[in-house]
Image (cartoon, rainbow, N blue to C red; front, side, top):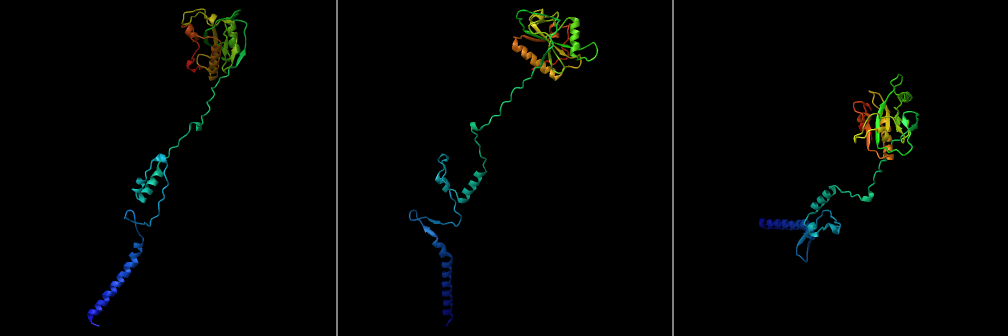
Length: 261
């Protein structure tokens, strides 16, 4: 065999082997190519996982061409981003539970009758009442300064009284009935110029001295008593003794008017 013939045989063998290799590696892929009869375009079937799209609700107005323009990776990423968006919770009016309104706190008023036989004038007809006067008193004769009985004894010695006296514990003692005239105001006048205030007023004494002020129970009792009186009569004025007799009287001492409710 000459040299040229040997070279020809070697070339032929390499050619056949190359064709066989080409068929093995590329022939399988070629079988996976599909030719579209309608468009003539060749589409390669991706070996990637298929993405299944659910039909969107009509009110979202999602167009099919918008989905086709995006790659599967872009669509998956968009889906992930949509899941991260905060959701809005809509609460229906009927689902809102209203907290029950807190009942208005009512201060109970404890009134004890301790009717006296002095310091007042009995009235047969109905008396017109439009003013409340606040006073303060304490026992200045020795012993317990806040002893209600001793304070009443002092009133008796002077021939005066009040319709009510409020003890340190907030108890209201009725000394004179509302319709009777109590001697509590003395020489005085109200802002509209009227004098003889005893005739159209109710007097309330609050047990307290010049320095100590009053207890929270007393403020609550005074507030409740004034509210009761306002409910019974058309009250125009609520004043202190010092308001109707300035320069002559200084009570109620250290009274905080802002505490009245």
